Length: 135
Image 1: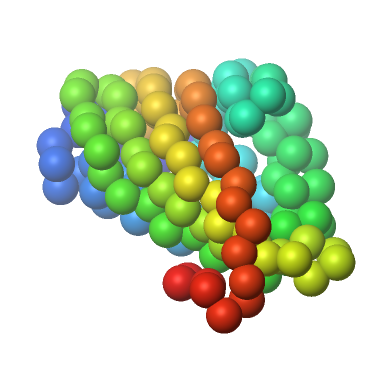
Image 2: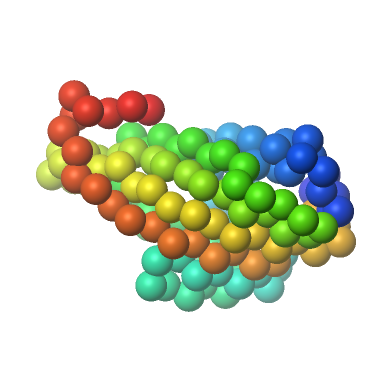
């Protein structure tokens, strides 16, 4: 299976890849999102280590059960060959109604078929008031 655009990335194709990821994550569909990753993908997400597409699906299902009204924005930070660095922010509320804005960086590495084989995310959460939402 191939997921275009393929590496090596240009600025234009890196931005396309990022927009595709943003759209998929905002769908909150764990199956759809997981299809962009290799079967044996490796993730670090905050303090969690996630391995393989099945674990990605489980992680995302739990994430979106707990992060209600999730909305994400991503932007290009840097790229080279088969790697892309992304800055992002997203907002969500928990089951008690507290809103959060999460900021962070992701480093992505892709295989020759355009599937992400590694994703390393550093994320910080900030409590916000509903009136302070931007997304």
